Length: 202
Image (cartoon, rainbow, N blue to C red):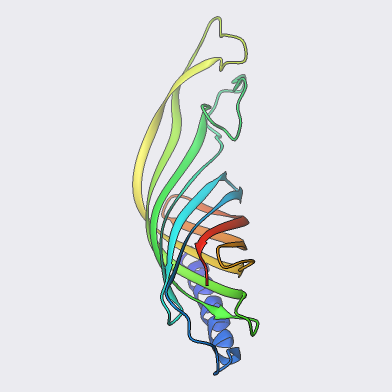
């Protein structure tokens, strides 16, 4: 996993250096900006990401956010039935909840500064949960699970990497292509989605 982390960091540094070389030296002066963003995370887990971003006038940014996601567990009994559920809510699923802070840098792609590449890297605290101790229910209710269970819970530190391609549609609304990789010693979350941005964007 260490080799994978270093490879990703090297790629991001290379892209960042290329973006710096391409920036126009006559870019207009901008103020500090701030916005809220959110997106579904679709990958080896399914969930949602939300964060608050502050971008300084020099292009550097700081983000505070959280990712909550889940995936089908391998620990369940063969005859386990989840009943009715959406996105693994209230089911026996492996859960991944991450609280993170990250730093990034804007690299404007077009002269109007409405399209930009914003890679970021940061640290997070992740809470991992896995269902265990399954006990069958003799007569489960309609559209309900047929087992009870407990959760093993574990907290760990991790590394977050997010290279976003952002499109500032208006001064207060934008969208982004938002891949993410979140590393912990025990598990890795990877995926992406379409990010929606609301706030003072430019």
